[in-house]
Length: 249
Image 1 (cartoon, one colour):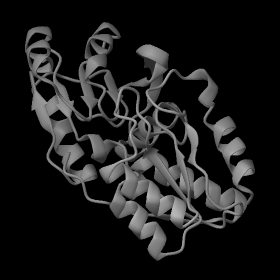
Image 2: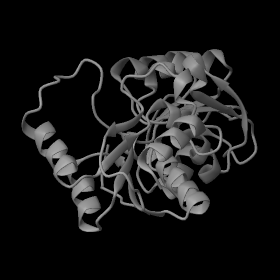
Image 3: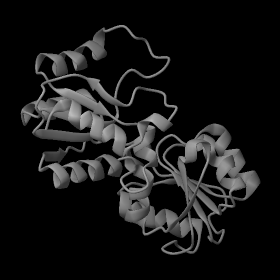
């Protein structure tokens, strides 16, 4: 598939134009024109780039790419090494951040719901990033939900607040979305699941009575890029391979 045709297709599929984001979405580093083999991963780390190089991939597709707002823009050190790998080997880098969290079918939040058996009933928070669900597939209490997350995600989440609170409505948002906790409470959630937690989140959970479950940034954002890769493989016959680079956060 032509590089720019792929970029145009992905940009349209994920509706990148509607998002205010912290990084550029789409083709971030230009490589060879023809894309036949694609490696997918959560973050464009050196380990992922080396894996792509080992299988002679034409492109890398990630959730966390480069050129984040406010970071040092100099091409030195680790940044130079990563870009050197891509440019010297003519490998394209595609990255989709908030658009891949929010997509109704292929996004991280939609895929997390599918994995957990949650029914999506609505959206909340800025740019409709957060998801709301009803009672179908939800464990009886926050503590029971945390146990199910261990089973599905393969890591121990951190639960703060009332683990015995009965669940009728759940809110979730993958990655570092702890700042949407108050929005989740306002939306009527009985529990909020995200990837990360901050110091103030603990107090908010205790004082509001709504438990907060930090299930892991990486752990909650592995599924969107896998679903997107599978979609490309099905629709275009492209070879798409997901590479898991272990991350305990």
